[in-house]
Image (cartoon, rainbow, N blue to C red; front, side):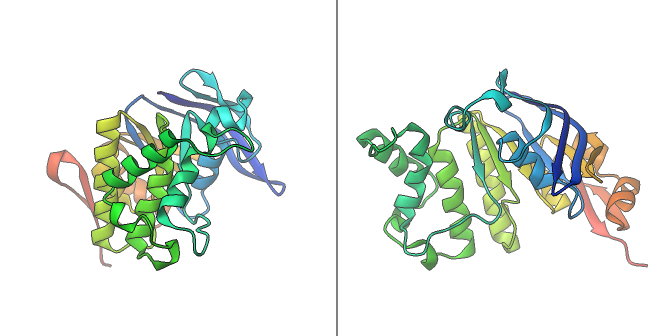
Length: 256
């Protein structure tokens, strides 16, 4: 399912956060949104979800996202927040089951199918053994997988992930990115992530969109976007760019 954004504008608290932002994410591809802190990356995802008021055009699978009701939108797009609310004492199974909420009637209860889908998702993410464990008894990497599990339980064609590797060590970062990539390919998902680690973004995403100052400063393949001059201009960092496996860029800091 293709995601298209045209001339998006978002203002929060009287301050313009995004202005004239356009991008297109082809069906089944992975686009990473990068940029310095405060550039508006997370706001872009929230606008696609209809969580913040915006101007411009947003479409998912040809549907005008801004005209859809929340429940209709939740059938198309799933979202994993950077710092989600993880209720103390809630089990992994019950939290993942929340992903089925768009399919459960108001004042109704989950069906056997909802529970079956939840069990299947936990199995795919190697979380079955944690099903009865409280969320507050999980490690950081385990929590990230559970947040992803809830999003996958929605069974949507589009997956939005806000900084899925934040606060994880390098090993867990790689595990999460590999997991997202496998799920994208097996389920033909369209994936949009925000991510602050430029090398990780360059190693996994098909395309990068650099947001700086609330606008698109660069867009294209990782090789086109992650150049020394571009990184220095927008991140105030001098880097050495080399070519890694598959021709993808690897970044290392240049010492003065």
